[in-house]
Image 1 (cartoon, rainbow, N blue to C red):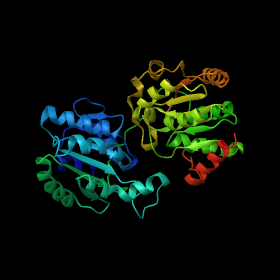
Image 2 (tube, rainbow, N blue to C red):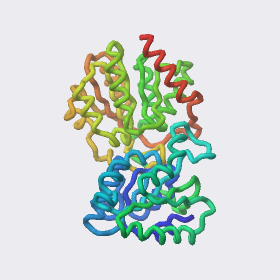
Image 3 (cartoon, one colour):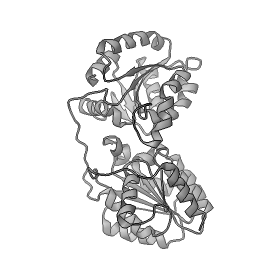
Image 4 (cartoon, one colour):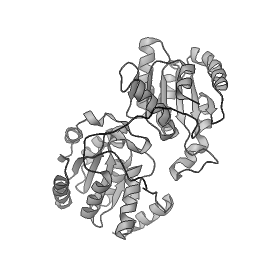
Length: 373
């Protein structure tokens, strides 16, 4: 179905969300139509942030907002759904548009399998009526579903359209780019060079895929790396847990700007604990690149200042490989918590593969390595 028709049927004028690859036609349409616009479209840090922002919009306008997300974001909206939006609390109506990764019977990556199994039931258990849109769903069926939703919305309830892979279409592609020159894969290659046999915890998406392929190309073991293939925003907290319990070894966290923004409170916890052996690197391309390239607010975010304010004693930013090598070498030799922001270009190899080992194998080999130290 065409995105324009879906949004016409819903009839909303405000959208907020976190991008998803299955919803790229929707994301492109919103960017082409509104861009980032305070009145009509805001890309938020996480899905709970979106739901709360949308709640504020409803309070101010009495209108029904739309929140879009990948189904992995359902976990982030459970708290506001139950304790803010629910009709037993403030009865704030909302339309969710949810990309269905890991749909049963459709091949997907391991982090999406269980989430896909519970996508529809989780919404229904939270009191959210859901309608699934697939490739063969007609405009009339969607219109009938929306007409059926309107009474629920009038009663302060929430509803959801769950989008199957390939169900949405948009003719206009949006081009995402920035002015940075260093490619993320090359940045990670430099990190691997300096980290040696230190453990690395890498964030979800293309960063972990690139780290895996760099190890393959180098003929190195994957035992040094924990690839956080899901749980966006939690990579630095995993790294903190490892660093606190393996103080004799440097621990490297390869993070992304979208991930760091999603649960930024983790940086305050890291700064408060200040493990001497943690090196936290945020590769900032100002984009949710893995799911299509929509921008994050990191373009206007001073991560170095945030790290310093959170208690990181050493925090720097770099935009060249000479600068990167200098700060990586210093962090490796230093006895103290380090933060490095690296400005990165958008883009990845068209032939970038995925890890050929299972998530469970990755965990077991990483744990075995940590416990051999």
